Image 1 (cartoon, one colour):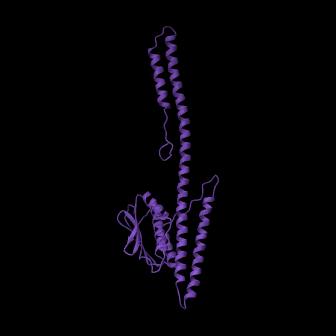
Image 2: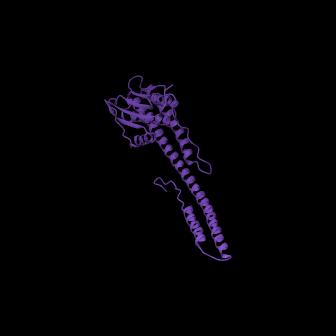
Length: 287
C-alpha cells in the first residue's frame, strides 16, 4: 500500500518464473548425454519450463484478481469517507446557517420598541418557526442518509448549485440580515465549483450573522478570466451587537474544500467589516 492506503500491484511471479525457465533451458542445452537421454533430458527441461510458465500465469491471475478485489474495497471505502465528509460539512453548514438566522432574527426583534414592537416580535417568531422547521426537515434528511445501510449504496444528497444562491441569500434576508446578491453571468461552471460557491456564501452569511448581527452584507459571484470568484463582505458589527464566536471549523472545512479544487481562500477584516473571498479555477468563457 502507498501512503494513502491504496493497494499497490507488486508481483515477482513472472520474474521468478522467467529465471527458473531460463535455468531449465540452459541445463537442457549444456547437459551432455548419450543415447536416449540425449533426447529425453532436453525434452524434460523444456516441458518443465512450460510447466513453470503455466504456474506463473495461474498464480499471477490469482494475485491480480485479489489485488482488484482489494482495490475495489479501498475505492468503496474512500468513496464512503468522501460522502461522509461531505455530509458532515453539509450538517455544519445547515445547522450553523439555520441557527445563525434564528439568532439574528430574534436579536433584531428583541430590540424593536414602541407601537410596532409586538407586531414585529410576532413576525419574528413566525420567521423563527419557519427557519426551524426547514432546518429540522433538512437535518432529518441528512440523518436518514447517515443511517442508511445494507447491500445497496446509500442515497447521494443532491449537490447545491448556482441556482440555489438566490434562495440562500433570500433566506438570510427574510430572517433579518440585509443581504444583497450580485450574480453575474458565469457561463458553464462545473458542479464542484458550484457546490463550493454555495458553501462560501453560506459560510460568509453565517459568519456575518454570528459576528456582526443584522448588518448590510453583499454577496458577489463573478468570473475573472479562468476563475470564478465568490465573495461575501459585510459592513461591520451593528451597534451593541455581542459577537458569538464559533469553533472555527467552518472556515477550516471551507479552506479544505477550496484547496481541493486548486483555488485560494482569503478571510479577514476590511475596513469596519469582514471579507470572505474564494477564487476557484474554472477555465472557460462566460456566455
